[in-house]
Image 1 (cartoon, rainbow, N blue to C red):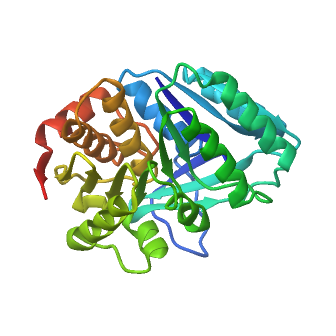
Image 2: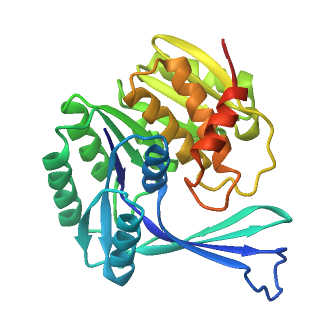
Length: 308
């Protein structure tokens, strides 16, 4: 089972428009409203791949109750820490003339007491979960110390913890020996101070992180594929070229594929192939974490892997 913690979830409003041009009036062809946030996309992908998960995080206000209702309607198990702050909304514009445009609200402030309640509620749920992911940004008023305390509790419980975040939060995570990370090349570039844009630079970054004592590290490079390094080995995998509709949520689907495979006791190379297939399949639709098992299987058969 997989526990997906999203400190800053959102209502995702995805608008499908024929062509997007700044300054023009657009009439959407379709609207998709879904429970959003990186951890929910991970859980959504895991559910498609037949694995059980639980979503946790902060929720509040009318938007928070809608988020909870939408998650439940999809069959996503969830347990929310309720706050006085309204859950944010993120707007995603999907157009035929380019990749999706994502506009993320920052969210509203979360107090120290809210964080303490989240940690307490996570601790109560923790026992049956071997795999944990902590995904996305922190709400306003949160500090790196809030993240530290959550990660310390999870690590002290002996869980395998995966983190997908960026900025100062990622900088903090990289100081944790034994933790696992999944990031994209751009996020890793900002934390390590050198550009991670291709296979050689990603190999350099992963080698450095494993030497620091991290347990497992994955870097995604979009259509160029993804690399994974653990103490057991190092691999590079790439899926087939596809006509992408939207890349939003592809990194989350990648992590959902990786964790689902590990939850099913697959080895690391098989897990990386599943992750690449899930991330690639996600690009074929407009919603984060939205792909079919048929699309996943078709892409998985075409994905290729090698050691490095």
